[in-house]
Length: 229
Image (cartoon, rainbow, N blue to C red; front, side, top):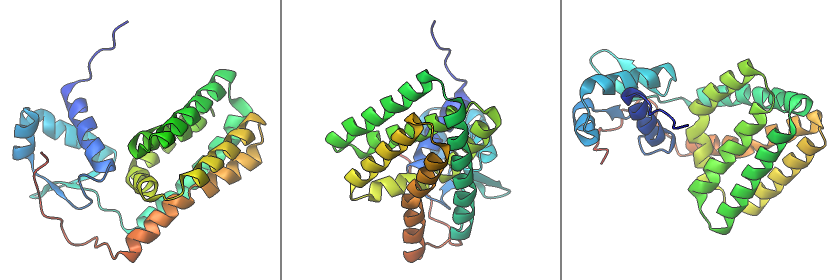
């Protein structure tokens, strides 16, 4: 059965979301509607609808007389988000061990294999996407709709930080061994161990935040607008 195409505003939102979370559109950067509409060959109406979608996701801020600006989280806000996110990961781990079906476990192992294939090819972007799917699949295995929804929302807001963490990672072998331990705990249905391992696994995101802080990233100065070509 063919899958229906997404409405145009959702397609535009997906494109912009990808630019934001992969650090192409920078925090604090103003999104210029006219040149962007020309580049995407769309009118400004669906573009503005797309920006409203991203504003609900808190990836952009809509301000009078300024238009849309990529949300610029402070270091403290990032740390607060990560702390809540860690708690959700821990809860998701416990519930996944209680509720996961065999098909859920198989899917998670499949994403581990995808990460290993990306590692062999030194393809960091492919690795990151498989890594995201691996962790989201564990939360999905909790079969708790409310948890999955809230976790997904926070994941979007922390996506850029986790992306930077993977891009900066030097020792992929270490990360791979962490994933193997995570899978072993899940296979044994050891909720306490899996919770601890998933929280510890977020150390890369914590280091990425610390690196941003050490670099003295400004959260008050607007980034000059630029072309998105």
